[in-house]
Image (tube, one colour):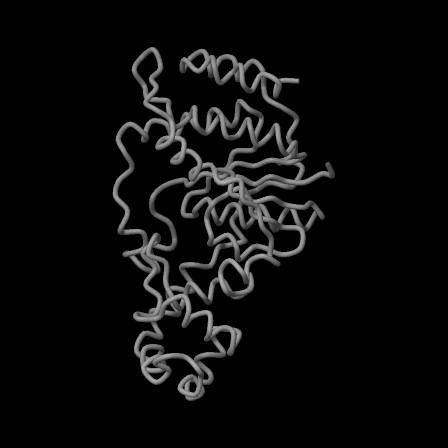
Length: 292
């Protein structure tokens, strides 16, 4: 396969590992089931994809610049389970032992890191596979960039997004600005759902164009067009704030170049030491080929 980069949402797959793998503990009682699940998923991905460049992005904390925009951002999410908390640091130790560029930047989310890494990779003409189940990353899709949901084995590109989301990749942020995103507690315009939001963007192309032509909204062949205009007027500030919240940043200060993402296999000594320390010998066996 040609050189290409796999850019992975490590936080998302660590959480998935926690909920999909039965409780497992190291000899000292430390929970390691999420780390085991993440390691198994990464080993399978690397075996199947054989990428030339790899990076795993992690959230560096619960609070980011988005909370300064809206303190209610993700306020609907509770604290992570107590037995998952100690596994955050262990997950990064594992990915480092596997020889993978491991990145987390305070004040930014993993999605922002992935967006910035995508820009860096594309500037070097590398094709990119974003490994995540997060629909927000659809805004990054373009020729040479695809999204792969590892857990569901679903892959798609920009050409597939209209059928999946009702809009083009370059309109996805405006779609979220209009309809909101309950998973992230992004409000959107109250009373505007996916169908109305897609219809608005199908006609006007962008959020900016909608607000430049509000009178025209009432003429659209959309149910409740007159009340739709009123909602757009009343909740304009929410729409604009939601757009800012939903937009991934492509300028995170990473301090690295594309060559820093080149994957040359696992660090055998570090991998053996890590898996032995945390009673993950079975994982070491499954990824031993990465040492070659």
